[in-house]
Image 1 (cartoon, rainbow, N blue to C red):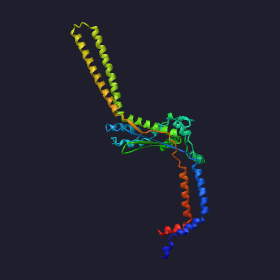
Image 2 (image 1 turned 180 degrees about the vertical axis):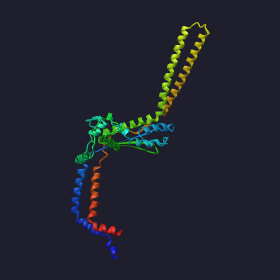
Image 3 (image 1 turned 30 degrees about the horizontal axis):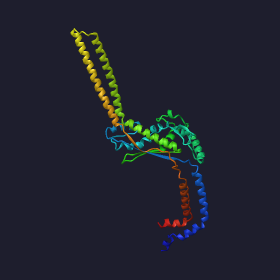
Image 4 (image 1 turned 90 degrees about the vertical axis):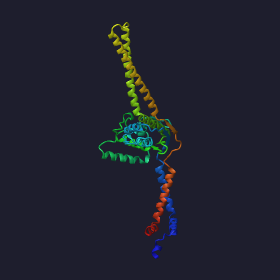
Length: 354
């Protein structure tokens, strides 16, 4: 019984201890508040913009178009071949270097109009940073240079970037962009939501809209890849058949002009032969032309349409960092740690009781 009494936490004793330490609490809160503000206030603010769109889906010949799209970005689709599956692959496209590098040549302008450049240069040279972390970044940079034989590299040209072989600098820049853009697909409705985060609100909205357009172009291009190849093939055959038909017409006309009064049987046979050849060329040309028109109609049918449910708009309020929330969280955390520390004896009883 006496042992159980020892394990009982005396709340009154805890309250007395905290009351006696109230001056210490004020000192702790002041220090934590000052350090929290010193840390969070220099952090650059960022904005977010969302764009939502719904693609037209069709269950016809999706596998070929999707296979081309996936293989272009290094994704193995396997046996998937229906519209209920392929929208879920769009987020994977946003993690591919090919897609991210294609965004670097987008022209962007800051909200105040002081800077107009491509997205690559903006990320490489015009990003705001926390000045408190500059010594830390420099130290890490010197350590990396000392441990590595190769230099990190310098900002290059967006038009000359090779996604297959990126420098360390460009690779880190690409990874940063991947953390700033995201794509989510609602599996029930197939609605695609694109989210972009950036330090400038106008660039944030511009980039979100550009990514929407790029995504639509990629989807259309690879959704219709097989049909477009067929259309180009039939266009070539139609042009070739047309040239052969025109050549046969000219040859037949020249022969008839030169032999208006046909007497010899050999001349009549030659005329009939040329006429038959001309008719065959015409039939071939008509068949190719009909097939070409059918393929063009098929291409139009398989070109997906998109409905923009939520357009890109310039955000007014920053999405973060949540400065008040951060400071309040640090104060609460400091309070909890202080309470446990000042009453470690009573807390020890609680653990012993368990």
